[in-house]
Image (cartoon, rainbow, N blue to C red; front, top):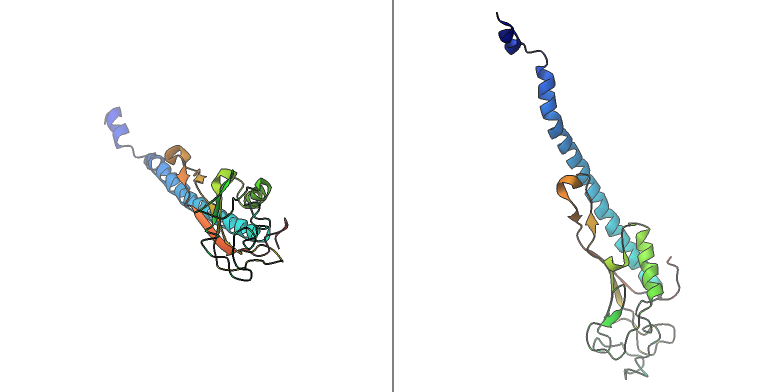
Length: 199
């Protein structure tokens, strides 16, 4: 038997060669499973941040500056003691820089940057990657409250906090790049809309 024939028939080290071929595939699957769990955890963090942002927003200062003190009776010609109509208060949308009415309103909403930052800061306690640009807050008509209320805002809007345009960097980012997270929204009805601490 020639030396070449001896090496061709030798099967020692075959298991090592097979193992070397299988290991990269096994590692990709393992990291993929870890990535799916990591992605689900990131979704959970973002969802919880949105919920806590909404909870904070309904019990602290309103972002549309002036809404809590606006008189729909004196300035908006609504009859005292009646619910503020959706025509008088169509809702306000706030971004990280300004608040605007969703339709023609009887008032011009201001923007309280301190209140917006406080909400975004509360959300960052749950997901630190959140920037102010990712947060949107809507104050929508609910039919609650009444014109001329001496104890607080004349409207009790439905406050919706949205978390948008978030990215996730997976463990296999060298293969996948970044992955978009879904958008999140959570709504609650405004409570006292004053102060700077939630309960």
